[in-house]
Image 1 (cartoon, rainbow, N blue to C red):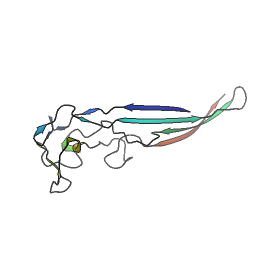
Image 2 (image 1 turned 45 degrees about the vertical axis):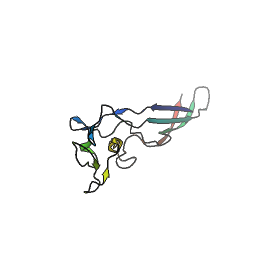
Image 3 (image 1 turned 90 degrees about the vertical axis):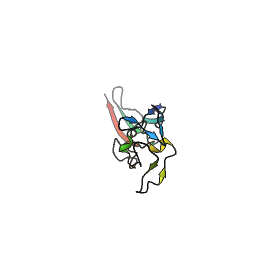
Image 4 (image 1 turned 180 degrees about the horizontal axis):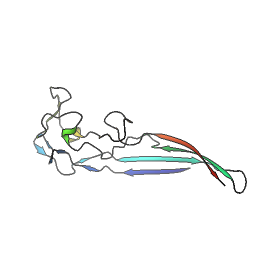
Length: 144
């Protein structure tokens, strides 16, 4: 049995509006003000050799990838607020998110503007399509 684990702290993100850093409720954000999600993934391989004689062996194995099925967007977020899946009221000075035409969600924290960017398909649902979901494979190794 063998494990392979990888863990990273959250990486910094700078939100922009076009070529300028985003302004939220009249205050311009700083470089690397926001943080992504910490990354953590564990893989597992289980194998057991079966010897037939001194030179022949058969080793069946099973491998598990992303064993705990953790969504890992890391810092792969939409960096430009003009490309957010939910539009904002004013890209020059964000004060509200607009899921409806009334722009009914006031922005009280810049973290509300963090939206994972898709990369690998619709594995974890819309808007969180980053990382590989749990997967397994089986195989056999013949040595002679």
